[in-house]
Amino acid sequence: SLTKGKKFKSGRDSSGRISIRRRGGGHKRKYRLIDFNRRDKFSIPARVASIEYDPNRSANIALLVYKDGEKRYIISPKGIKVGDVLESGPNAPIKIGNALPLENIPIGRTVHNIELNVGKGGQLIRSAGGYAMILASDGNYVTVKLSSGEMRLIFKKCIATIGEIGNEDYANISIGKAGKSRWLGRRPKVRGVAMNPVDHPHGGGE
Image (cartoon, rainbow, N blue to C red; front, top):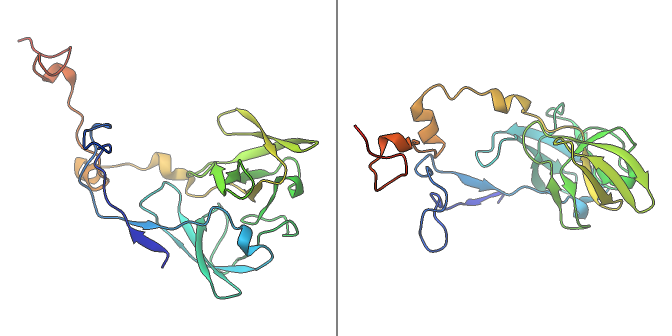
């Protein structure tokens, strides 16, 4: 199965105390198991069967059906559609959604889901609309510019996926009403001025 149960923490830490305020409630979610690695599927083509909503992240996810029959989810890149064929590995073609080692990706291309350690799976650039750009290759390392403007030197054998992440309008979604925030598990934010003196430095007063 590509999904599993997920227990809400409601902003509590391991001792049961609130560590992040204003969390709790919301709709039940199943965790979707995402393949951030794609190494064990080198050179096996996969067809995009569907592009789906994932409540656990800002990006959409794509369901891949590999030629050997296995199904997996990946983060959905911008510009792929149902029926496209994707591939991973050093010899995969340079096209959106394919995963290759950084040394095999041309300079100037945008990438996402970048590995930091070989074999660990992608750790950088995984949220909606994200991308990084490959600027240079020198010896064993490739220079990558992240969307924050930060430059990172990453080992050339680490894998990245070509293209930007889709659902780039996620930041512009209008919540519309208080109830929708509650569906998402976000509770109201009480102003300090509205509290009693015991609860907040701004509390009290007439």
